[in-house]
Length: 124
Length: 165
Image (cartoon, rainbow over all chains, first blue to last red; front, side, top):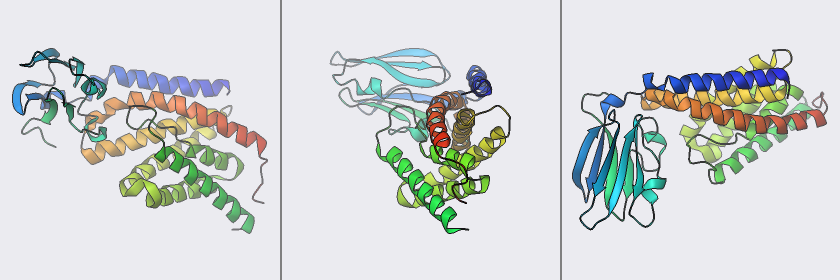
């Protein structure tokens, strides 16, 4: 490892930081909708561009706390025993292709599905 | 092509494929898609320093083609090619800069490998917003590039040049 190696590494990290700061320009979050379904029925449907916390309260007393933030949606906390929905992490337009569950976050115990969909006319 | 060069290239191709295969079968150590060690680049780096640019290209092509046929699949082959071509081009350019060691070349190669794959993913899925994922991949490239760079610098310092002559 030499001094110029460190310069290359620093340059890459600076580019990463700059891209991170500018990432708003790359996201087309306005074209996407977050749909939350409970037992297959639509609970709520919100644009991904909203920064919001939705408390999905279930008839049996359970809950899933869905957060829409910075062009992504995730479940922050839930009453379910396995917390799989929390561990499934955030879904955003950029990571749908790479996620095992594609555009969805699924909580099987609570039968809650959070799904990211492209709005009609958004183009694909 | 001399018999010696053919044998060395065959050996390095096998090494690159085994490293690629290990990476393919171990569970991902990170939840982030696309974040992987890139162990096969150790072999490509070694070839860059101890063989020639042409041999490095041959190894990269063989690794992508055979790796695709054996485990990565057709789509994996396409991503491997996009990453490999961009990565090796970048490494050849960075290597020309005086005062840069194989560690710097490795980090640059990893960064461009990830950038190439992400560009292809953005094209294929028609999702320009994927560019927002690039910072994550760049930071992971710095970490994995440092590790593979140090390993390859050990190999390069221990194996003399001219092994194909």
